[in-house]
Image 1: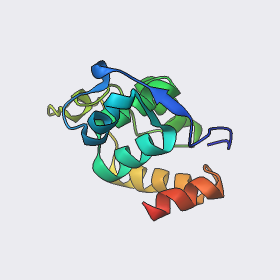
Image 2: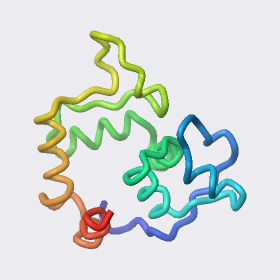
Image 3: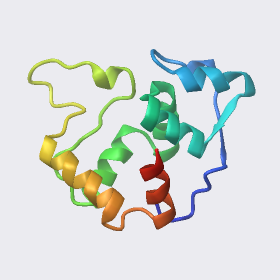
Image 4: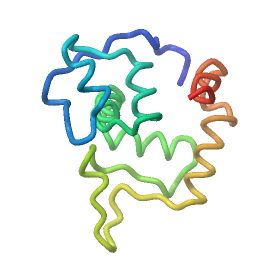
Length: 127
């Protein structure tokens, strides 16, 4: 979050964005868009898979998320697939994995270590 993204920016999408467990994404489908903030809130509060994929699309996909982890010092967490596939867990499969300590450190850095603007941090804290 460099402070350049607008929360009210409309993210257009169609029926192809509706995947298993996409309650908010389904609700907004008739309008053909969600705002960045609506998608982020749906992803955080509802675990909305369609909203998660919509945001992943906007940042460049799962590989871009992994690059972001590396940029902020997380050498463990990785994202390889979109929803709902990222939830498929096969023993020994390292795709879409992290560790509790890596995730705790990443969340702390994102929320309190300067990775987000104070406005974005306060928004997430309210959720």
